[in-house]
Image (cartoon, rainbow, N blue to C red; front, side):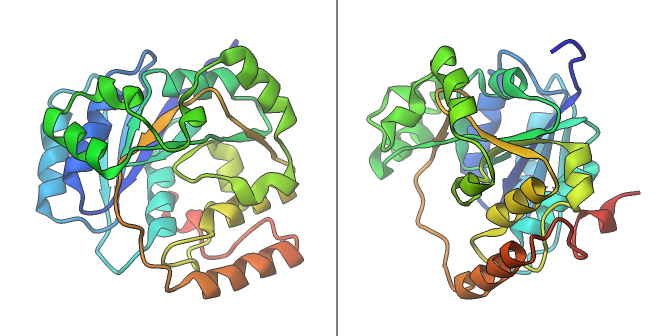
Length: 268
């Protein structure tokens, strides 16, 4: 890109500093560092704050810790707070239970286009390999394990370019992965970020993707690039899924673009 944007990497976390440590180590290996990293913390205890403080001494770019009280699963809210704190024109969104391929940031930037947003994929580490990675802290090993969805760990830029134009559009919004997405901040402001009426696990990412598409921002998928490795953990409870499905159905039916309970309440 001719005018390279300032990049903010927003990483959400909750009470798992062991995973966040590996995630931040993988940020330090990036071939193209983000211009800042923002840890969006959904109410973790002091161990996470202490870990972030340790990494702040090592990071070559600003590492910010945005914290909110623990009021249950409030991922939409902490992501909005992170977006508001971001100074970059372009935002890469990820989770703190991931190890990043060293070209993650570089790949998102390579495929960033005005008027578009991106959704990547992930491969999954099994419990035994995740435990080994926690013990060794050898993050360069992450891509060498036998992974579930191994095909999502293959990096091939010509194939990624073909897929970029093949997998796109509103009809694909149900497949977005919130743990590996990127956006122009102006587009997030236009739709007012995440809808904070979503609480508990599920569907808040799909809602955001649908509203962006409805607002004229084109969805493109990244495959064979922007690779992430997901550390094993038990799935979050799905107790709010039925309510969230209703919210999503309403957003689709009304062809919604903007939500009232969103990002603008944190913007200066």
